[in-house]
Image (cartoon, rainbow, N blue to C red; front, side):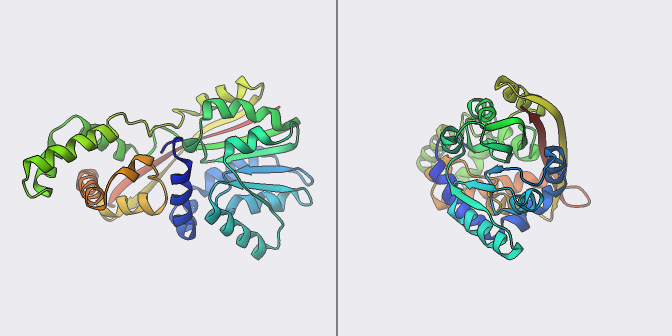
Length: 296
């Protein structure tokens, strides 16, 4: 995940929009409902749902605040199309805006919303700068709800990432993958080390308290802060890798620099490594989320 290539993130989410709810949204229903309850939505409220995705929770909020206006914001046209269709099927009206979170927040009039919702958006924005700025958009008594993955999410994957960065195992497997060509192996290994050495894709906050602190920098007062954990089970390591691609969880811009053969090698490398986490129920993957509701 990265804030450096919004166009790549847009393309990725355009491609996963059709299956996003089945692959991801259904697993995080309870944390989202908790956020809705904390926002204390009222009829007539004006709501901005930033990074609205397919509109699952946008439509729910629109129903709760009707006849108030609900504005759904997303950078992916594919996601907005899905949100538009969902609203039409539900008989609800949404105002849909294609924009990055940063541009929408900086360009909107002050004190223009009663409620702001930001769900799983922080991985794609400069949240240390953006979160304090959201206070400007809220009317007196306005509320903001933030739900985000934390740096503790998918720990099985990140444990492998750290392991592979500090061991020779990937080099040996790459050597065999490259038909034992020393020259090709060295060249590609250096490229991979250069591309992923920094681990800069871990851009989300480490805790709910970190999110609260950034909102409070903007003058908001935290009302609720919590952490949720959801465990997913998969039959194989390759199924985990496939889910992370198909759900959009892996959207790091550096993947643009990797050709298909190299990407296949990385998929196989991580799939084999994930088998080491196998339990009787299958291979676990833990989603760790922080939720915060703050008020002006």
